[in-house]
Amino acid sequence: MVLLLVGVSMLTFAAMSLLGDPLFNILGPIAGDTENPQNIALQDEAKAQYHLDKPLPERYVRWAGDFITGDFGVQFSTDGQPPVLNLVKERLPRTLQLMVIAQILALAIAIPWGVFAASRANKASDKVSTFVAFGLVSLPNFALAVILFYIFAIKLDWLPDTYEATDPFWGFTHGHRLIQLILPAFTLALPIAAVFQRLLRTDLITTLQEDFILMARSKGVSKRRVLFGHALRPSMFSVLTLFGINAATLIGGSLVVEIYFRIPGIGTAIVEAVLREDFPVVLALVMVITLAFVLLNFLVDLLYTVLDPRVRS
Amino acid sequence: MSPTNPTNVADVEIAAEAETGADHVVNKRLGFGFWVSVGWIVFIIGIAALAPVLPLKDPDANFLVLEERENPITGRMQEAPVQPPYAPSGEHWFGADQDARDVMSRTIYGARVSLTVGFAAIAFGIVFGGPLGMIAGFVGGWFDRAISYLFLVLLSFPGLVLAILITALVDRSLFTISLTLGILSIAPVGRLARAQTLVFAEREFVMAARTLGAKPFRILTKELLPNVMIPMAALALLGMAVAIVAEGGLAFLGLSIEKGSTWGKLIRTYTASSGDLESSPWMAFTPIGCLFFTVVALNYAGDKLRDYFDVRELML
Image 1 (cartoon, chains in turn brown, yellow):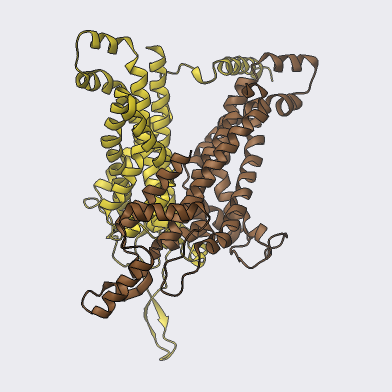
Image 2 (image 1 turned 30 degrees about the horizontal axis):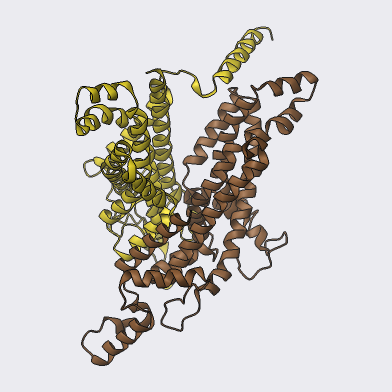
């Protein structure tokens, strides 16, 4: 797990160090000047200050040491060097809000949908639901964003079409961010829900063949109760695994969604930072994302034991 | 109604039968949907490849429509261009965009780039990831562990971020974009190749070849490669869909190929203002539709192909 983090950070570090020249971000056009001795002196000074004159491995070790102790470095920019940590603190909550809402929505859609499909396996309604799920999985998130935006924000005008970072979060009018996040969250949630639903359906169909389901049914427990009370819990494993793996997809998707819906979160920050060639920011954000991904998968492993006591041994 | 009852019973029986089988239903046919998907893929590749020959409108030409209008200053009637975009008509089947350019021919020309990127990316992934995964699976040991670790790192890295990084730092040519997406497709392709190789390396026919004194290279190319190629074909279709979508995503962020148009880029320009989207949705929905159908077709064909050959593998 730690090895994975090291690998990802090295890859990012190497890619950025080899492909770009951060001097331009610190000094502006002065960095391109190789004639004027005064400017060259300035360049050397900046290089020394940011340790850019050191060889790559040494810079990596320096950065890694700082990172572990919670110092994410400073943003490279021509006007002052605000710490990267401030940016992360400002942007991360917005992305997290979006993702949590999206995951809740995804599960809220997927569980009833999956149970419905499994209880009517291979009937016409199940075929239709499989068809819809397939379409949703194949629909790129930017296309889905446009379609949802067109239907719900423009044509029906049910949901707000702008995101204001300064608006209060809790509340149920167009002036609250909770409502402003619904459309972007749906864009993220629908394809995920479709994937979850298909997995849950397959698992449920297998579970419904088990003896304890037959037992419950013959005892006279209602079909609904069997589905939700008995069969659902042991059928959640694949969904749970995917819940962790899906974090990466969710992050990729949130990049596009944040840009389209103009949400100033982590995704927007990464795109901005890459375009500015602001290395420390990109590096820090990539690491935050990877860390979140690793932690989430770890949590999922823990959740297994809660769901199925047999795994504990 | 009495005629419905027997069919209902039959349905239930079939359903019960299928349920017990779950995923192991032996279905030796690719089905109608598969051929529709293949038909669409062939169709879209065909018109994209033949676009310069087909009687299409010039994608870069402006087709301003003139109308008789009263000049507000002179008060005389004179010809003046109508404000584009134009709604779909016999002249422009899918309308014309903000610059009065034909949406249909722009979408078809966009397909050329989008499909090329998709194909080049997955081809790159297969050419490099395939052998790497196969050798790792075959050789084993530290080499296998190193390669598996590399794949894991590549997979857990947010791919779009890497793509953004490279396109922003290098350039935005067709070559760079394809290469970037190609690098990203190495890991999934390689993992599949490795897994397949591991499975087949245990089989009797490989053992037989070994006993007969076949060299590792011969086993890899003559015994294992044909078996790895089959699931790879299915993955290639799925991977092409992913690459097309990824390029679209990049384009949507404004980071894709600078010259020419791609589907993602068209969607971006046609949805840039919500006013345009509201007044003339056909502009955005033409490339979205094309992209969607292509991705669905690739995914569906890939899925079917995978099911089809998995069944064969079970029967071997």
